Length: 208
Ligand code: PRP
Image (cartoon, rainbow, N blue to C red; front, side, top):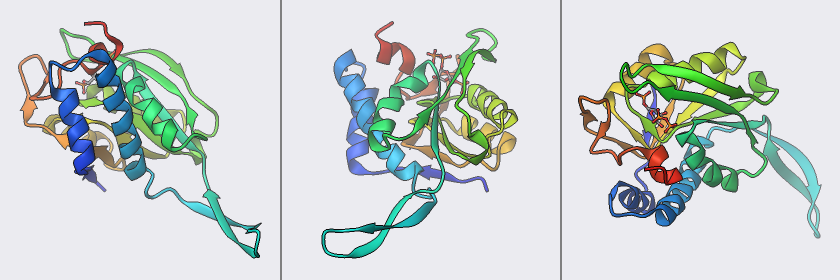
């Protein structure tokens, strides 16, 4: 499938500028992240299947709709948590699971350190969430792990993707579409995305 959707909505681009700006403090950084999570969720859920059922308005009977499958949001800890508020604000019934992966700063290889997954992955519509797709190591690792746990219909939602990370996910998981707010230039020698926004987790949690 190898699908990448770059959400170029003008409002989203203004929030992304707030996040990229190194002068932005923690509070506006969090607010912009939540707003972007909301907009990304709107696009990432565009293919969510519906089922219809009969309701009655005050005037007459008509058809209503609800999701045919559970929406399952899985942030890759830690930074993935930053987009969750905005996403569940858009779809408050979503289940939320967690996968902990950090990137070893010397080898850049992903290391699993936590998981807590909701039941029903096999029939769910799953959004795996991480603001930064750099080498793609963490994302690919998390996707393999979730597929082993039964997830099938998975969408990868990020804020900024490097071409290297997109290529890695496409090679390892061609069935998983990527929804992102931007594709940046490349990785630097420390495998940081440039221009990027720095370390999303540290900026969001105020741990710089
Ligand atoms: C960052 C980021 C991604 C990962 C991206 O997490 O949030 O999870 O690196 O890099 P990759 O595509 O090369 O794997 P980090 O390891 O800094 O951990 P954190 O989320 O706990 O801040």
